[in-house]
Length: 136
Image (tube, rainbow, N blue to C red; front, side, top):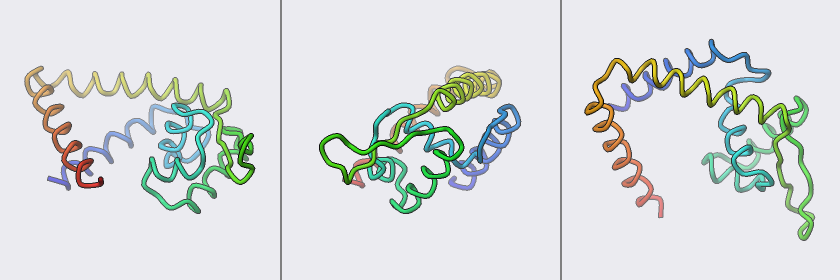
């Protein structure tokens, strides 16, 4: 089952990458999504949201800052905390990505009947709920 999920994900993102003209490596997309959805998020919270190590976040955010996708500012109350904010470029890339993902989802799921899609959504939500409970 996991092989099918990974294969689907790989093919989906390969097609998405073709449709998007990204000004950065596609592996930075999850970072971009988290920062755009949570402006001012602390780097440690990005690590937690993406389930990756803080040094990896620091390196990636530094590169994204260099590429003009994010800005970092010290927290007003605790200077040890770096807050990450999306730039206008990041917001535009996110908007374009969201539109392309929606279009691609429609292309894919139009080949399935609505009951199949609904069943798939319910099944994935159950799996997410199970895995989320196990994390706590």
